[in-house]
Image 1 (cartoon, rainbow, N blue to C red):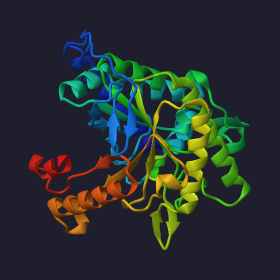
Image 2 (image 1 turned 135 degrees about the horizontal axis):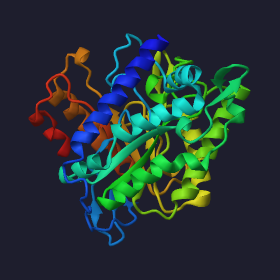
Image 3 (image 1 turned 45 degrees about the vertical axis):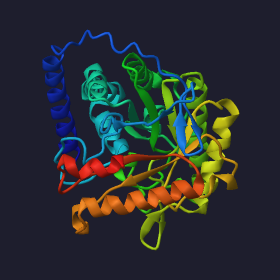
Length: 362
């Protein structure tokens, strides 16, 4: 298992490096777009800029960059794994410095400046940047002759590890793109899935636990958001703080968003607002348009509600019908809550012809 993970990541890094060498001939010295982005905020069900002009956020995710989701990166290991497992495997083989050097090669090449230029050239205006607590803290430590997970209580924000996010935001600024900072993996995991970076507790992660561990995970996640807000509170290129990707508490065998999730969202919202009143805060649902509370209940302002729509091939429902239903529900939720909505992720399998996604723009 470890050898296959390591080999796969090395192959990815090599191919990414080769791609970067080829791609650098594509006008890598472009000076970007001189258009200056301004702070955005919500106004009822609209997002507006500082001049009061309504805007839409149209973009893409930088998937597989700062958190390697097994279905996004070109690995074939036959088993789902989490980011923390990969980090431990690499550290125990190459040492912590070696592990970070390998990750640097991968991250330097998985996303490059050329990607931001191409995103802009496609007519898009934002990027959603998934990251986890592991990108901003000290997730592993050496115990004896072996690297292990850092106990949750010992996690600490490392300001030097903001370099990747800082760079991405600078690239967004250069190409007049907005950035959505997406906490894809909270401390302890908010869903137990590989895209949170931690699959040790697949029944929903440790974040929602009633025990001391759950309390620690929630406190540490809040510390990270406070650090993020302090760092970027005056940065208009950042449009949205995305509190947590797909926060799924297990209920009746499914993952869903509950009042427990809402209460923690409110805790994060208040902590961020103590230091940053500028940025839009995104609250996510698992999974429907009506799994989130009325924002008036908590006094939330300058928030958007975010949904992810995946019509899996096994559903047997055509994309046109599936997305037509989702759009109807989204419109009803928007009318009910009077907040803008963001479709942060969606797919168009199996009939992924471009005509099938036109409905998302209606």
